[in-house]
Image (cartoon, rainbow, N blue to C red; front, side):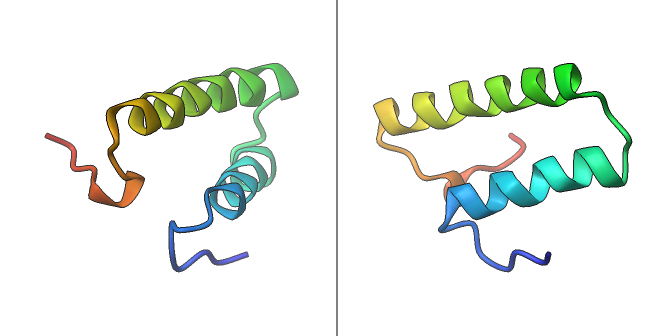
Length: 58
């Protein structure tokens, strides 16, 4: 499943979860922890009025 835009966060998260399971072979507990971290990031961005597409590594 190729996601070309990050406008639909649910599609991005579903693709990431599939990648973690199929390509990386990570356990459900590990994937759940990673999803929790991403949920925290998304919530923080919403509270700060920032968009995921505007993030940089800096």
